[in-house]
Image (cartoon, helix red, strand yellow):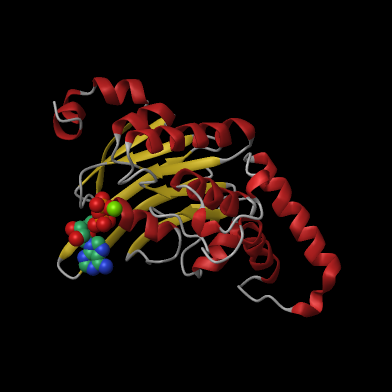
Length: 249
Ligand code: ADP
Ligand code: MG
């Protein structure tokens, strides 16, 4: 049993079958990549995992519990965090403040920051956020205005904001889309660093095969809303059907 088990998921948008009978099993502490051409249903599938969309039929189980019908923040509290294509940070706040916000959210169950909790709590949260920044080698930038960070550091900060919530499963939708090669390589290194340091499962949607083959333990190829193959990176590379359809050969 994987930490994430998707069974028989279907999702239609009017006359379009965006997902057709999707099965996916993601093993704990692995990086599982989902690849496929534009319009294959990758983002739709991810949205079904985080509660942004509800499948028409099928089941999505995380740690043996159904996520279906739960709100995105409830699913987040179950231990699933999502990283967006463009880093979602608060530019007007400092780096440290950005990492503190998800801690308040985690505690309260929603973005409600009340002062009543007192200084004691806030100090603990600050220490936790600082430790997280230290872990990602960003502690020296803690008082910087977040908007002034480099692109790579914005991505690093976003990862800190995710990881401080101690998720078991991290979902990444094309984390290197639109990036130059140098930024892409930095992101690969950052994700490798995260993977090596902690027990975490990652499910990554990615177009860039260099990223996929650098990180993935397992790959699912999605085509027209249906998984075509699921295999190791070595076998996916050698699969003539996949080579022809997705690797442009
Ligand atoms: P991918 O992420 O693999 O590029 P998507 O999951 O975004 O693919 O889209 C799969 C298909 O569903 C596409 O044909 C897309 O146009 C369609 N689609 C996605 N979201 C919606 C929506 N909210 N309403 C209607 N059609 C949608
Ligand atoms: Mg997409």
